[in-house]
Amino acid sequence: MGGLLVIGDVVTDVVALHGQPVATGTDTAADIVVRPGGSGANTACWAAHLGADARLLARAGYDTGEWHRAELVRAGVRRHLRIDPARPTAVVIAMVDLSGERSMLTNRGAGRHIGPADWSEALLDGVTHLHLSGYTLFERPGLDLARLAMREAAERGVTVSVDAASTGFLRDFGTDRFIRETAAARIIIPNLDEALLLTGATAPEGAATALSAAYGSAVVKLGAKGALLARDGEIVAWAPASQAEVVDSTGAGDAFAAGFLTALLSGLAPEIALENGCRAGAAAVAQVGGRPPVAGAAGPATGISKELYPIDTN
Image (cartoon, rainbow, N blue to C red):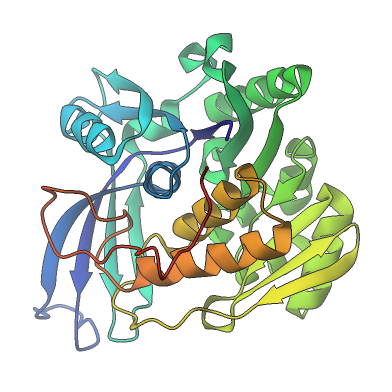
């Protein structure tokens, strides 16, 4: 299996699980935990957990950067993490309701300043696939980095995928611009809301086929309804969601991307990779936080057993 390089964000997640609607102007009781997170870092950690040679290029801040570095080491990720001496690490406050759905307050901190200065051509040594978190593109330094990384990946024959990341940021960035800037990617992995926004379609099938016509392959995450795979303008597979008790949806899409890409890198067919992505996503929603379980980590976690996730990583 070749290496997987993820370019994305490292975030300190403050996860608040509340049983009642948030009350304006007063207190709302909640269980609150702090976890390492970030879309790019989560994907890299899940990929390492599932047997991939996972690497991460990211930027953390002076306040919690060393903690994040240690967590990535413990997760088995080959990290390329720059500690920004002038800025704090990104922070997300995720408010999770009884259904597991989350609303987020975001400060991108040091992550919004990742750029070409963080890049080295050597990062692609031993890598067969590059995965970009869409968050990287939404600031100019990150956009320049993404352009550089995709260009050098193409020169080396490294395949590229992109996660669309966020409807709010996508809308501000411009959907046509996003598709144009990520045209070098051959796989896009949006959730349903992102897919509909990017295409203007009104149904998941239409969105998936439109995106696959642009990228070659589109994997649209449908949450509790599973996932769709389209290639070259046609729907080719659907996978149902794996059964899971939903505790917290944080990181579910990141886990899905890791499961799907790790299976592809293992040589499995895209249709099987789609099922593996759903299994990984189900494991993610059954725990608090966006990362897989790691020995010695704080807080409750549920892992992926061989029975739940029978992926061949040889």
